[in-house]
Image (cartoon, rainbow, N blue to C red; front, side, top):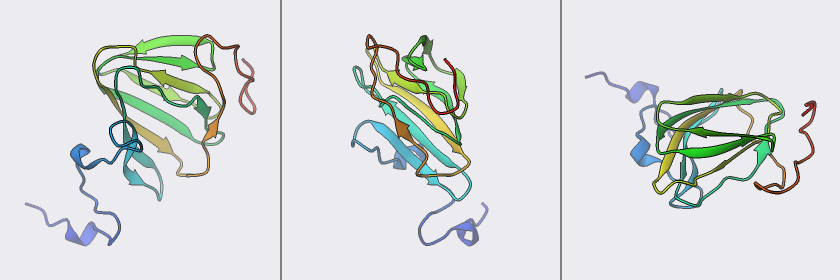
Length: 141
């Protein structure tokens, strides 16, 4: 077995488990495995009926790989798609995205945001059925 201790810092061990993730809202929301210095990596967990805040990132891209369950995703408040286990989606800078678990089971996805910028999340008030939100900075819808 490899000794990983030389790769660990006081704040952030290199080796972590999904089981160690602490979600923003205790049982759901985003939870981070790694925050910087180059990327954010984490797990997004939504219970049936849960949703995220519609938002975009001006400079970073965010990618999602579905681990379990099915979720509905809205892109720029116009396009709706369903994602299930093994599906991958890359949200480029400026693209609004919103997730809602309309299924009966838990939905989880691994996400990666890069480059690291903890200030680059911009909420845009919106939910399905509402008028299409104003486009994010630098995007035409």
